Length: 254
Ligand code: MF3
Ligand code: CO
Image (cartoon, rainbow, N blue to C red; front, side, top):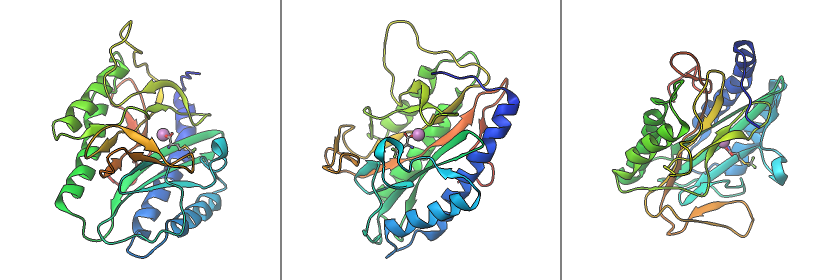
């Protein structure tokens, strides 16, 4: 399902996206050495529900928690548990909120205490790759233009662009069409053109080493195949007749 939203639908969707953004800001402020990922999840859930919203991921395809918290070599879909964050960890928090019929979806990778320069670089380049991508998030361009820009930025540092998971449309459902790979896929035809009113979750997942990934025995958690560090950065955006609106980054440039 690919849905085009009117301006007023996007304005409605802003509410879910702002709750999502506020939750990430809360998580950022809570992340510190010794806190468990379970404690972060619990607080995020309480916070989202305090707005009358519902955590988008809770029970989604059986996912048991409200936030995906992926530490170090974990790429995405880390399940919060008793793990205590350690100095030097990088921790990706991916969260969604559902209210008034719409979802917001966004992720950030936070640094715990003093991380290595190379870890900080990975986190920074992953974030930058999102912004290079959305330079092409304009009417008339194609999804593949966004994909190529993300890939080109990450690969110039020798990083691996994860292939097995991709960005997506988002709206009344968490996952809608179109697919938004973070790498260029030559295929028949030239791919979907961007039109005003698309709302998209663009989410580069970048590994320090190989792009290949494995899934842990819990059936969810995706890890880099070589156990190299991995970072994630995601916003929900809206395509307009001009610049895209970053719906999950209205309060702070985080
Ligand atoms: N943010 C993830 C995505 O973009 C959703 C997590 S999947 C869930 O696809 F099952 F954990 F919800
Ligand atoms: Co997403």
